[in-house]
Structures are given as structure tokens and as C-alpha cells.
Image (tube, rainbow, N blue to C red; front, side):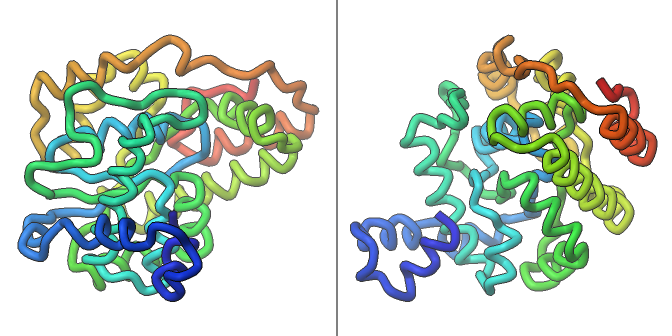
Length: 279
């Protein structure tokens, strides 16, 4: 959807159904609707930390369009304007809904809400959590550059889960070696930490455990952060998709002593990991 779609606009004859894609991207939102935008939202954090669930819940809100795996930071670096990004992100969100809102074996369909649609567009955002964090690790100034070019504040939602649980999922589901998972997780944490330091007040911590236990409370916090209201119908619909299977983990990893020391050091260094253990 990201780089390949952008290339298709340069060479549309290379992909099928380009007229349908162009029509979908160019139909909405209109220029006057973009005037209602009040912020851009990025999900950041390690993989398998409930970022897809958070993104789906946000996209279900009548004033938010939230794309999935669009990689807004990368697209911004490639020169997309706010109008182009908004239209492509809406197209992305509509496709996600049309495809059943399924991701990594789960359904993230929120019944009776506004996934892939909106009433008044006030927030646009993207769920590409780990990639976004890694890009901030490489260049933290991207947020400031985006704010300057788009003329809107960028608010980041940091999805967090137990380090060992997140890395165990990376190892099991992506066939990663433990050291590779540790390296990726550490860089992700460093990118997130830079965001907290450089943009205080623009990052909201959301723990997976809290979201699964108290979804309504967590969603109210998120909406307050985004300066939006949340109806009871919306909160009830979002809470209804929570199920016990969302917290299931893969088989435990046998960490070496050296790897456990690295995990413990990460927890000690990053305040947002406080309360987790290296096992």
C-alpha cells in the first residue's frame, strides 16, 4: 500500500485497477474537510503490543481516520503533502474495513462504528508502531519537520507490553533469533525514549494490560489526549471486541543469563517499562 502504491502513480500501467485506486484516493476528504483537522496521531512502540487494536478502536471513532501499516513517516519523507497523505490514509482505512479488519489472525472489526469512514475529520493517524519508533531513533526531528510542513501538532500513542512477552511473540511469529529480537526491541525503546524527551506532553503511554482489563477507561484517556469526546455507544462497541485470546503468548523463551541482563538493563533505563520483569 505504501511504496508500491506511490510507484504506481508514477507508472500506473504497471498495476491493475489503477482507475479504481485513483478514484478512491481522490474522492475524499475534500479540501474544506481538511480545515477541521486538529492533529496527526502516530502509534509507536514494539510489535505485538496491541497497537493494531488501538488503531482499530481509533479508526472506529467518528472524528478519526486511522490507517494500518501505511508508514506515514516514510511517506512524509518521500514528499507527500497533507492532502495526499489524508486521502491515501482514508483509502487504506476503507480497504482495511472491506477486508474484514483482520490482522495477524484476529478480527478488529468494531460493530456499528465508523471504521473506514468519518462524520467530521479532526484527527488522522497511522499504525506502523515499530517502524515509526525506529525511524525516530534514526531521526527524531522528523516530528518537528512534519508539524512545520503540515501545520498540525503530532501526537504519539506509545503501545507498551511486557518486554519478554513482546519479544517472545517476535521470536515465535516472525522466526527471529532471540538476540535479533532484543536488538530490535532495544532500538525501538531508544526511539520512543527520544520522543518522550524531545516532545514532552505529546506522547501518551498505553499499556496492553490496562487496555485489555479496562478498555473504556483507557479509551477515555486517549480521547482526552486527542481532545475529542467519546460516546457511550462508541466505548461499549470498542470494549465488546476485547477477548481473552488477545493476551495469549507464545511458548516461553529460554533467555541466557546475558540476555536476561540486557532485558533487566532495558527495564531499568526506561521509565515506561517500570513494573515489568525480565522473565
